[in-house]
Length: 174
Image 1 (cartoon, rainbow, N blue to C red):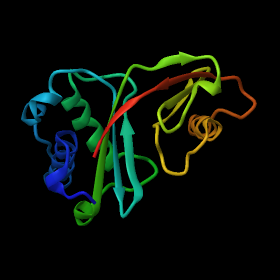
Image 2: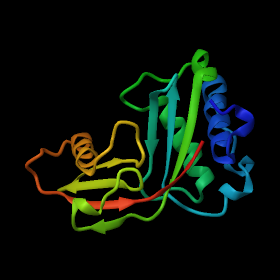
Image 3: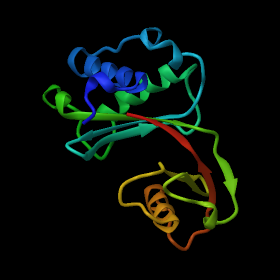
Image 4: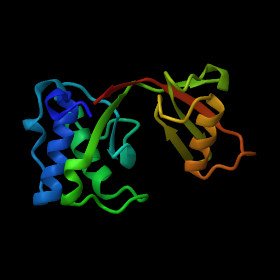
């Protein structure tokens, strides 16, 4: 761990939100976030890890709030409490959590899986009304084929169904 003193402002705000919500049931207002988080709109994913293992990850592809601070606030609470893969975070776990915040760039349509590089681009797969997303640069996801397969599985899209693909870059803060 890099230590809390080296956290980016994005992660520091996500941590404050989760700790406040888990301990007190309320969150600091977005106006208390660093000013650099208040000026732009973007989709944001907040990921929580505990001893290196995923503990929660929730995000938005497109901004739903007025600014990045609001996106972080909403998605940090959701990551800690409503990720269906995990029970809600407890106060006993807070000191063991590591945070990362991914701020998404606009997604772009691609024609071919060859336009993906999982170390650089995240992917969005769509088929009918279903969609699945996988962030870039994830441990154990080394090929575009793995990235698309996992995204399809997350969306409930069968391997034989046609999909449309989009790719996106992120700025990842730890």
